[in-house]
Image (tube, helix red, strand yellow):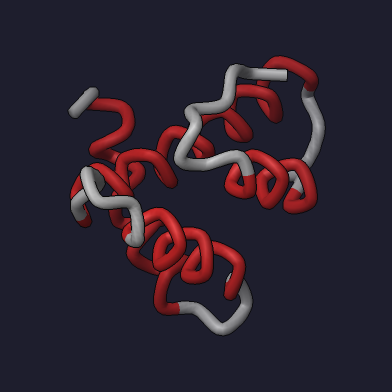
Length: 83
């Protein structure tokens, strides 16, 4: 796993446990239903989406867009490309 994504895993773990981000848990459970995706890969996919949103925040100098993050998660298990 990419080192940058690995650093986001604690944030993903928090989001999976948080009642404020149920869509992260729902996405995680949904993609685990895929026969060839394990827990580590699923968390890496979530981290990829989070990294994409963080990069967009920094590039566009704007606050975190939870709607965009949720949209990226909805595309999984297909890995989204930054938009």
